Image (cartoon, rainbow, N blue to C red; front, side, top):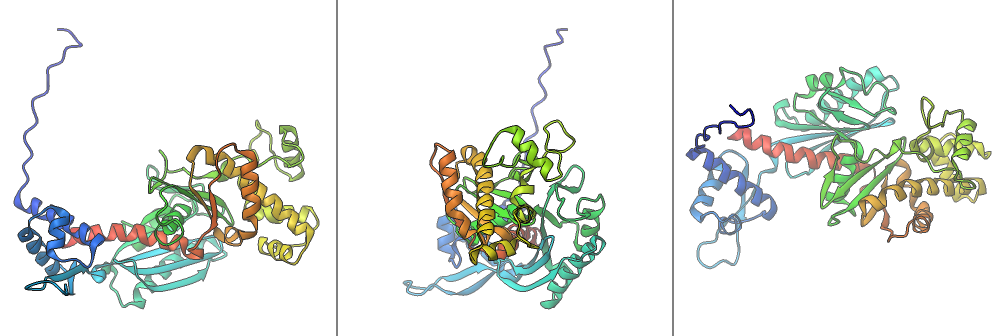
Amino acid sequence: MNPHSRKAPPPSAPVTRGPAFVRQGNEWAIYQHLLALAPATAPQLAQSTGLSKVTVTGALGNLERLGLVEQVGVREGSAGRQPRLYQPRARAGYVVAIDVGAAWIRGALADLSGNILARLEKRSPARASLLVARIVEMAQALAEAQALPREAVLATVLGSPGVFDPSSGRLRLAPNLPDWERADLVSSLRAALGEDTLFDNDINLAALGEQAHGIGRGVDNFVFMSIGTGIGLGIVTDGKLYRGAHGFAGEIAVLRPAPPAQDRGLDSERERGKDRGENARDDGPRAAIFEESAAAKGIVAHARRIGLAVDDAEAVFAAALQGDERARACLAEQARQLAWGLAAIIPVLDPALVVLGGGIGLAGAALLPAIREQVEAWLPIPAPEFAISATGTDAVLLGAIVQGVERARLKAFERAG
């Protein structure tokens, strides 16, 4: 027998779909269209979905009995009998969103319309061992603020530095959050908050928040650059968040920093690394990375090297506003570093807009002209627009709510069905 000739497999048995399957499919389609059109009538939904008015009316009645939609009045001005208006029921479930940072933990409770019902904000504990307990305590307090039982919370989303690796069940690339990469972290939080607790990169969530509620709304291609304790990028392409093959898209912290302004040669870069007490050699155990120069610690380190006695990056910005030339020189270098990172990604992604966020980015209005000028000088292609985030410190929470609401709506539908 020819080893390359193989017997064709038998044809698959036809898959049959019963009435219950068809009904659920129709109801889910109607629910999705109602989310976009609400408030809407049965005739409107019939036209939008292509289903018959009888099918839509029956589905709306069932969805109302299940507590997923509600009547909110009638359509005024209609000839004859006025059709009823429906909308998704916001209180059919709830979402907890938590933004875990090196300095602060911020939390919010939202309904299925994304309305924030409760908020909490606490300092991140100095001891890493207390971090999980603080997060669990906040999630419970948010639900208790609305007197909700645990099962009413259908999705919990945690945004933090790092990337969740589903193959190992742990977070990676979170050096600014002590112990956040330990092996039992995810399992500990899921045991306390629920097995369906979602973990996502904080800057990816910030990009979603900016897309839904900020100046990224209606922009199909933009990047959200967050500058604070760390630095990273959230990427939106064709209206969707882009994560890459392994979830590491936007991890620009690991890029090489801009070489010294006076000499962009590799030798000078190595010398700078030695001056900073780092091994910046390409063949050394660890090369200098972009985050060390462009994030908050890099700003402070540069300020101290040129004679400024400061404890944090905010003090550098304050000194610059007061006219200190050394502080202004420090911010000019910060703008150059950020432009260097953007010049590496703009030709690849071609974004229409670059949004600056994070603790440093939100204070970066003074940096924008210098960033734009440097990018335009380095690149022979059109530069994008530059802007400061309109969502402020809420960007991560808002993005977590967007993601959580999508998950919770599906869970509410599945649970009701």
